Length: 363
Image (cartoon, rainbow, N blue to C red; front, side, top):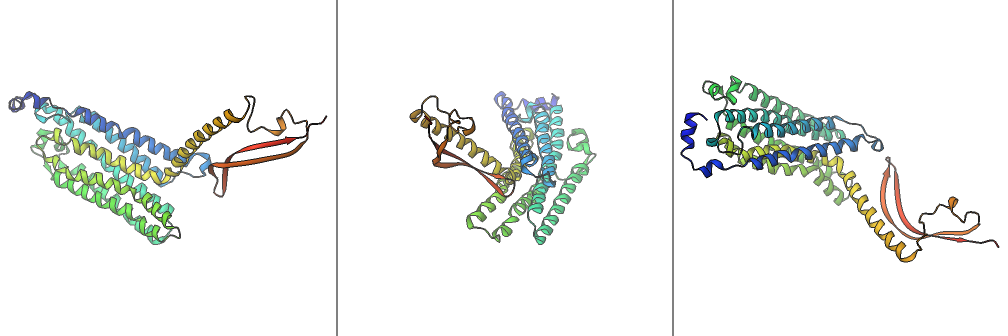
């Protein structure tokens, strides 16, 4: 540790210098990774399975790229964040570690920009594909162009905002570098991002309200497509801690900002995937619950009424009584246990019922 840092550190108590939030950093940078991967993988499986009769579209490719960059962002936070002293007080770490943290923060920012912009483009591409209204598609296209311009501007500022670029993380270069105001840049990025989120996730509501559908259906669709507004809470919370980028104890105070920056793309990806996966997800849960309930019901019924040698769903052509004429076959009672779709127009109905077979034995 440099001499100046050692002198500064001597002014603090050992308890203060030993404080650590590294476990918190590692946990909250790690958890989004499997969530993002599994969510997008399930979406792709739903679209690519043979029974769906659908192909991957632009919205799917955008969300795949968003997932890759969001996962890379978390990895950058894990590799360079904790290794650079994120979660420790700056007085307790060396100057080299601080530079590692700042370099990681710079890389982290690039991945963050691409992740949130790609998610927005995925949602807009989905709107364009499922809503056929011409005026609405024009609005979607204009919004997508604005998002892409915003992404390009952010990347230009990150790339050219410091001359030389090493001024973002190297203390020696920063002493002579000409850089933009990092706090003002971060504030403007977050404010524009929040405005985009509110606009994009409320866009479909007017067109949904004009649909020829029941009130309950309209409310459900509005909720489904506007659930992404929940990520606005993360954006707003992130906006409230942006001031930490100017803190002298940056490796300690930026923990909250870093965690929110990792979870914001995660929340956006989940909300972007939800309209495409909620039906198969609900169907799967209902199927499992129905199967368990039906299995328990049949087990109780069989144990109470039938002999051990009983076989339900007996096939008539393989019955031991198939050589005898059948006078009557009836199905009594029954309840629907499962509904499913076949293609676009067919419906399968699975039912449980009691079958009675009356046979005439020839003497």
